[in-house]
Image (cartoon, rainbow, N blue to C red):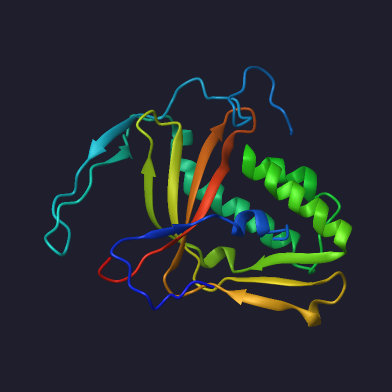
Length: 216
């Protein structure tokens, strides 16, 4: 585990494991054209505008970001809701400390692209090894502290404070023998989502852990 007492000058990022580890060691193809992430683009994109809030609390200039314009289609408002739905789905899947038979197929309802492949691959190897590796957290307590957009309106990125999160591993059928790695005080998730018009909701396409320290 990283030394969380070390103060970095700005947020640091680590190669992401938690979303693929949610059921790993750690396609339900839509009709019509799809992007490289495996989703069907919407007919009308989200409308994005530049935003600069001015100096921050320390008097330092804030970066310009892209935010959602009110003229955007209704689906653009659903990023946070769809992300939380994905987390609630996962939490329900592993509530009994095992991997349901339908989990591999249902991953495609919430993940897309490489992270979907990684999650399914991890799930396969865990089953082969007769071990369970799952994330334990409360989906209702996930605090979304920031949301940004790409200029083209295709991708929205959420910064999520997980509150209490543990990654646990144990032999299949023996959760009493679990070992756990807990999230740190300064740990956040940065999750990027894209809209799949074929499914009618946003899907997770990538994610990473970031560490944000006071004064950073």
